[in-house]
Length: 244
Length: 113
Image (cartoon, rainbow over all chains, first blue to last red; front, side, top):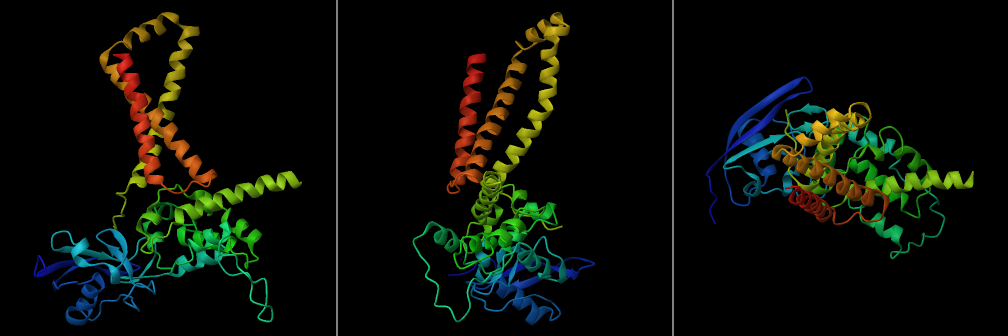
């Protein structure tokens, strides 16, 4: 099998938090080449000062996500042939996040929001307790299972227009993790999770555009998880009224 | 500036819902103003009603009914997604809302002409 073009025209965003611009490189086209291969080729053979981030190269670590021709993707699992427009590629740092340098986005706001959303484990036992029994067939467990394969790559966060319009919005990944913990019988943070996700930047900001679900490389469905949080936060309001 | 990826059905459904809602919000004050003529100036109302026989107005009414229907059915889809455990199949539901809106507004148009 031969590739269509022998040379790829690759525009790479270069710069820092103070601003930057696209710089074009000519990269030899190869069979079964991934976008991460292209970025690595540039760093190794054209410009060693190019900054980017990756670790596993097989879609497990979630560190190599970038904007490829305007779409947030894992670069390690994206074949050039599938996304190149003609023989050109445009590679930029993840949207909705500050840039550290070149293609490396600052992930701090993304992870800070996981903590803000109470998307952290709230233990109900200690290591001295017997292992908790989890009913794999229960509806709550299945709701949790649907979202636990998230690897924090921030593709959904970069895809979300609500994040772009509201800097306080917690975003799809943090809210989905909050939803999986809310449905986890071993997690004791139910009330604090619902408090965290019903605040100003919480789940009710979501306009159900579905870009998170559309672009999640793990084929998860944060939009439905957020819909679940909306239901639970409102159900709690009525439950409180009834109990008052 | 990084161009975001938006060309997928649910984002377009979102856009249609917003634009139709905005257009209806702009239309409603005009609608009530015309209706108020029934009390304040019946002659002017009759003149306006005669004006609605104009084919261009009929076409505009088709657009209006389409906006109303697509906002109504799209809104029902969002309500079902957010308040009932019906989160799956949203693309199909959005397409169905659009199809129903065309059916309703198309029927209205055919009856009007």
